[in-house]
Length: 312
Image 1 (spheres, one colour):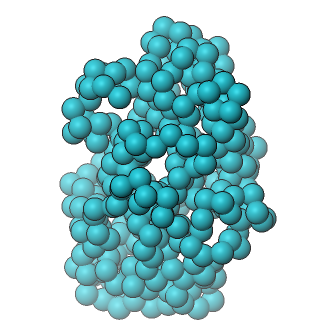
Image 2 (cartoon, rainbow, N blue to C red; image 1 turned 135 degrees about the vertical axis):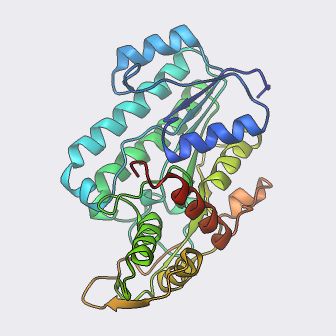
């Protein structure tokens, strides 16, 4: 991938897409193209085909997707499977037709079976039942992996896939109704600090363990794979380290500077006990994450403070 190669980042407004662009620019790439939704609806085959025919990108990062939390996945499963299937099928097929040199498809760790052995290896895909609450989204993402695999087999396309762990970082979603655990906790502790609340209530025992990766580390890893990986099997991207949710809350409490108590609501469910990716394949390519959990949380909280007066 030359510094003047034409690079298309689909999903450039999202947390991941914007991080990919930041990392590409830091590496010296300047010929980066993208389109807003109003200009290009990736669900519409005709629009996507026209865009690829006119622009003819050399490299493609497929980070665009319809995403949401458990409530959204449960409420709108038809939209989640349709929108994501159309986005990935349209882009992958147009990339093949216009001779894109390399494409990287971004999936999600929710593709793995609900009760997969820990840590989760790439080979565990399709070996068990999916988590019902995000099944529609997971099936769409699995299809994207398979599309890349079969276009590689039949047409010789250099299309690869990467599966990230739980992500957090700049441009995250801090809406308490729709956000994931990390930004929700940051906002919850910040507001408790500002309001002078004596306690913050957390769901469950705090014993489940989760893996978290700073999104700029993910972007760095994706760009590393674009330059150094070309295999059929997808690659897990994570830290290979996990933390108890209870410990995570203590770290966030310290970073935010909240001095009240943490109270566990034991009537609420814990969820899956553990969800950790095996990142051996990633490390074998020569990549290891750089930003530690506490440092990453500090960076996100600083960004949140700088932007909290805007709509977050």
